[in-house]
Each structure stands twice: as C-alpha cells, then as structure tokens.
Image 1: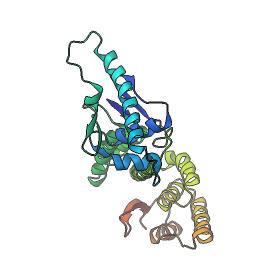
Image 2: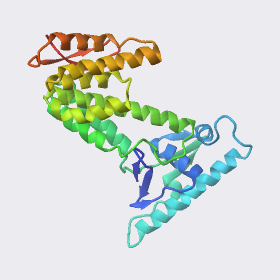
Image 3: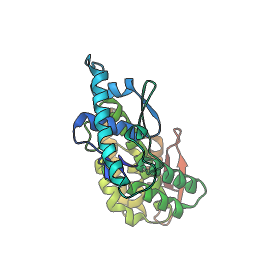
Image 4: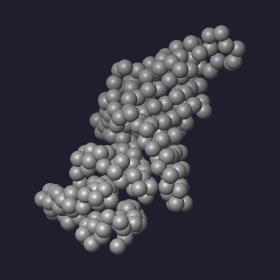
Length: 280
C-alpha cells in the first residue's frame, strides 16, 4: 500500500486508488493511513468524525464507513490479482478489525510521512556531524515530499487538525535546519527569494527572520537586514506586547558591528532552537 498525506490524500493498493470521495469515509481513511500498522481506537475515530457529540448510531455508522473502505480495497486487490498466482489477501486482511479499533496494514508499502521522518533524521545527523552539504541535500529531499498542507483535501476533525499542526511543525523545523545548512554553505544570495516569501508567510517566526537578516547582511544589504528586524520588532510589540528574542537582538547587534566579511557561526538559544549568525 502506498500512502500520501503530505498534501492531498492518496492511498493506493496495487497501484489502484482506494481513497473515497465521501467526506466521512475519507476522514476515517486519512487517520488510519497516517497511523498505518497501528491500532486506531473506535473512540479516536468517533471523536474525529463527530467531536464530543457523537450520534447514538456512531458505532454502526463507523462500521458502515469501514465496509465502504473495504469495498474499495477489495476492488483494488482483485485488479492486482488478475493473472497473478500469489495467494490473494482479502480486504479484511488489509483493514483489520481488532479489539477496540481498526488497523490498516501497509504491507511494507510506502508512506510519505515515514519517508519524510527518515530523511529529516538523516539530515539532522549530518548537521550534527558538520556535513552541511549532506544535511542540505537530505532535508531538501524531505521537504520535496510535501505537495501542500497535510490532509489538504480532507474535511478534518479534531484528531486530524492536531496531526496536521504537528506535521506542519516538523516541516518548519526541517525547513529551518535546511536553510541553516545552506547559510553555512555560503548560499545566502540563493536564499533571498525563498526567505522573502517565508517571512511574509510567517511574519512572527523569529528563526526565519534571523536567517533572512543574515542572508541580506551576507549579500551586502546591511541596511535592509536591520530594517527587517525593526519591522518584526514593531509587529511583536504592537500585536503581542513582546520584544524580539535574545538571539534575534544579538544578531541585530552583531550586524550593526560586523562587516560583510565576517564568518558565520551558530548558536543555540535556551529552548534549543538554532540560529546562524555572524561572529564579530
């Protein structure tokens, strides 16, 4: 089974799409696919579908959605078995009823979430080892798996919304480290267009703002680097009543004092977030 959730939901068995069009069965499949090879409880699925006010017929209705998914899986299995001699699995072997819930067997197939997690881990290991070229490559591969927001075309309930937020945070972390690696490799000019878009999309994201400041500074655009700091400070004070973080203020001070020939170094703040900054 091939599973994609980092964008539009696409689940295939034997190359045949088994993703339903109806919203509720689609929700069920999305949650089962995200947690493939793990038991998803009836309670979790019920909360996803109906929140805290499920109908009295919730269990029966959920069973109906599972049967609809099995019909799609069965059709895909039949297509894959045409002309083949291997023993056929049944839809119940793929979407299994277990005590208290259901389990979707991936059968050793692919999952974009698992591949993203594998590649990001390799990227982080390369960063820790000082292999910035390898880190940038692995993290770029990981981020390329995203074709849009997670579960982009699924009518999400509480469970999927929470999972989508979690996945988005992991994406932003990978993006942060990939940009850090690229800065370490001296690709500051190449990053400017991307960072311009990112700071517009995430106007209060201080790590991205710090990276943008550094890319501008290292490209010989010192005044613009300082202006972007002032814009962020104005936004934070006006909207949140907060000053920029200690690390961002330190970057500002070092840009004020440093020349464009200064080397890049890395610091970690108290929360473990990392910023690349010039060393005076």
